[in-house]
Length: 246
Image (cartoon, rainbow, N blue to C red; front, side, top):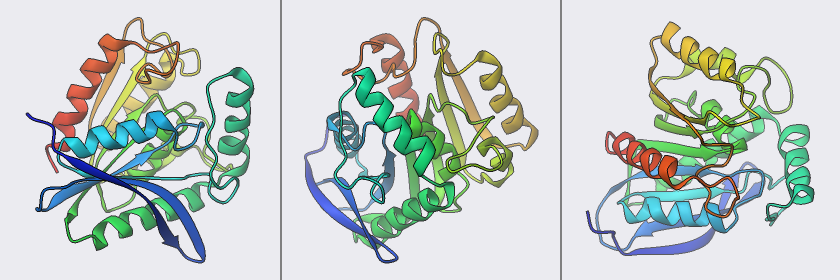
């Protein structure tokens, strides 16, 4: 498949009285396309997330990456040093709330559905790291028909802002979810992966779990030392197959 020509824009999403910064990428050719919400790592809507958003648009989707830390740190974008990681983690796990994240993602969905080139009943999402956990949350939204969750840590044990673990909401997922894990990921024990798979099976959720030997946390990000090109190539093919169902 030949990549489509795309255009990109920095846009504002209205969520109540909050303007959320977002990065939008869409094919330039007239037509209607499914919409995809791209959910960031703890590092913000940085060059990697913008690149993923563009890659998805080149496949024939309208993709949008909302700034999940808008309430806490507008414009936040950082690198991958241990010090920068710690700042992002504090925002992600100590200051966001699941209810607000879901509200902001719903606002991003509404923004997509209002665009004339978006098919309103064909919405998916993809997330990485913190965004992988949030993608599992987002899969509970009725509009989300297909979810790709990459190495979301803590799904069986916690949720942003506190409360019952995100895994406890599995029965609310109505679409298909693919989850991707590196078996050398020190932040996600194998038993957590097995718990997620068991819960998805228990509630008859359409799903696939992908486990990659030799891959660690962040294996999909070519800006990180943990980048694993073999695992990334396979995972990208799975994502393409998933989103083709929209």
